[in-house]
Image (cartoon, rainbow, N blue to C red; front, top):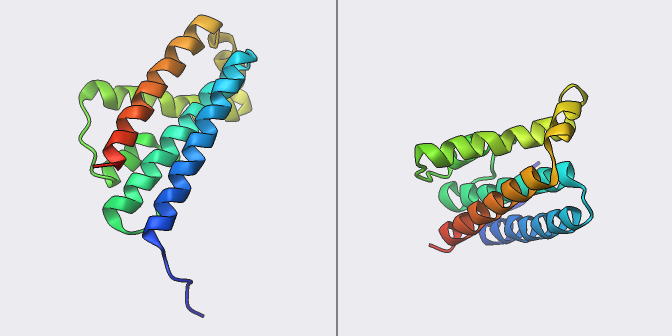
Length: 135
């Protein structure tokens, strides 16, 4: 049985549309003080833009990973040390929001000030990645 044909343009568009949806949902969660999940969805938005960039760069589906650094490497995105450190931090938001052993400390850390600062950083990173997707 053959695999259905891979439509690169359609797949890139899919990931970018999903990223927009997740970021907008994250904004709604910030407004309703659901800070851990807002950061979780901001991570997903970054992940999905990176998946689009992987498809654009390689012509193949992105691998099953939530590591923003791994996806950026596959997409051949040049990152400064600061950007690499930020992606590592944002990947932790994904893990900490999902897994029970990590949740309590992450929830405690997610004050309004912390979440507002990190969400704004992630929005800036998102915008930077979107620009990369348009190059």
